[in-house]
Length: 418
Image (cartoon, rainbow, N blue to C red; front, side, top):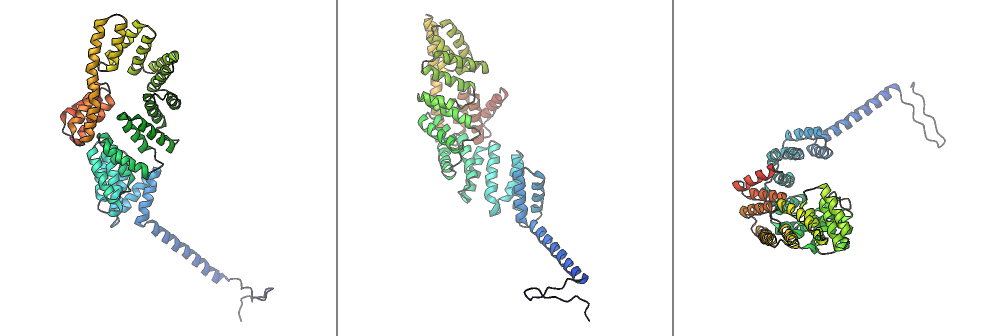
């Protein structure tokens, strides 16, 4: 006779199951534990699938979790058919750590797999750019785009390298494509603005700068874009618009001199003097502020003060045509005709150099693989008192011809004097 308690009916006539015995309870517990163990095992096995290791490594890298990224990289390197993924992850880690040469060593092994080739080429283009190898940057970026024309980061490296090499036509075309494909990215519009401003196409520059600002109100470089916009507006005499842009800029010497230009245009001479005093307080050697101050002193009839300021400016910027012209005017007002004539001759010589610069710039754009033009641009920029621009052109020459000894020597000299 069974010792199990009988089932009993419920209100609807169905039977209530018997309560489990100790034996059946143990079986159920074992089943649940086994099922849990199986689930854990499946999840553990799934977590170690190479695809998941790669995704986990990428997420860790984005979060700055280097330890996890390295662990997943090692797992991938030990997994058949997934070494390219491990190499790509290794290259990304090294690139993030600003070790571009070492990153390139790893990335070359990720090129054989179609799944990793485009990103490996794109990252390699960035590494070449960081090393100043702009020609290699362009070639590598183009290889990535040949596999996937929507690889926007590759196109960005291509545009940046082309711009730095003075290949502005190529840079312009790539930037317009990026701008169209990434309508919320302000960066291509900002660089298009710079290109237009470099060629004195100020109306176009204004349109590009305003579009960059519209695309991202929180753009990290917003203050500089506003200053570049204001400069173009001042060049076109659009003073009210320029002042509106300047109100949103940092109070740098450059911005303060532009405010002085605007104030002078509006007849607010005292305000112009105040802005120039602020600029010179920030940087006592700022040539544009000295030139503008000398001009205003001439307008005030303070000829001796103007001569003192402008002689100092000419000593600092001996190849500035504007400095020589302003000083010639000051000497002339004091009746020193011979000195004025000397300054006018120096002005003409300086103007020839200043006019040569845009001509060489245009020639560099037409001859994208000519290092000599870029070296000449660097030397001319240095002569005209533009050291940062000079260094850019020296690097551009060396990117095309690493054995250009004159460019290398000039760059080393320029960097030593920073």
